[in-house]
Image (cartoon, rainbow over all chains, first blue to last red; front, top):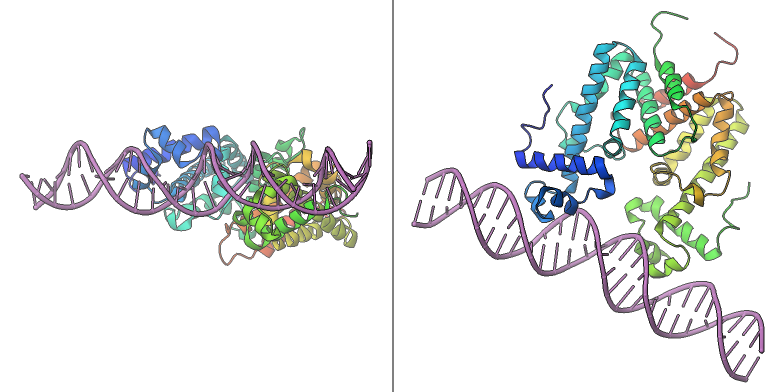
Length: 182
Length: 182
DNA sequence: ATGCACGGGCTAACGTCGTTAGCCATAAAG
DNA sequence: CTTTATGGCTAACGACGTTAGCCCGTGCAT
């Protein structure tokens, strides 16, 4: 459960990642430039290349971090209310909307799988898979729903007065496998 | 039903938009630069500014075009199989996956609403709304599902062997409002 | 016929971006 | 005491979006 970065990264590299995270979360993706990142650490941009091969490598660490936090959040939700799709959906939604820029960075391009701690991607997906009763297709559809809701909201695609909580409830309920009734 | 660009744009501007579309679809978003776009038309990049105020304005036209095509495709699917959510989902999926770069451009940032033909956004949304029996929340959830499926697939987020057709069917069925049974 | 506006090209240049090359100081290790 | 790694630095390159300013042709008004 301990974060997987302490041993994979040198202390200075961790400084850089955490400055990058702050920059991204506070000012958005266009502020995350190598020069701004250097400024924040009191060094010049080229010096960053002593610690990371390129900007993508820094971003990969942010993605790993985001994935790890998602896993933590979903596991906590599962522990609190085992087997509930709506509980996972709510936890996913809260975390994503609390870190919009990090969420986008993590989701809007192909995952840099080679640069990720092994098993992390699977771990983030597992709670929903379990809540869907092991139905892969249902779990994928539910994940797509949750991701779609977050990203459409972040992009301001829903009408202004839209009651998104109701849309979330409607969707999450549609993906809850029937345990007893009907 | 006629495309809404013929009268809004000068012929030269339409040339530019269509070159931009070709560039984007053939070579992806990083190829869509003002210099490359100029090359394709046999002119220099600064000359493009005689026709559009900036790159975002060209992209806005691409977005309008994409939205218009989506509306056309969904209306056709609705006409062929009225009231069917799965039919709309299938049409949405096909069109999006046939034009991945255009789809991303259209969806992964806030809509430039001020630059869009009025009513276009609504028109693209209407068929799904109708198929959901006028249930706004259901329609939003269904849209989120479809968008999520497309974008997660485009980003290679599903496992390699995943049967996405089944995931689509599962999700689309979950959003089909009950007309008679159960 | 002459003058003029204007549409639509051009070159040169600016500032920002990621990135590379190459230099130098400090500190640990032989 | 010398060497080697670590981690800074400056200068610079090429690509990006964009601006300023020039020029040539067409068509209309005087």
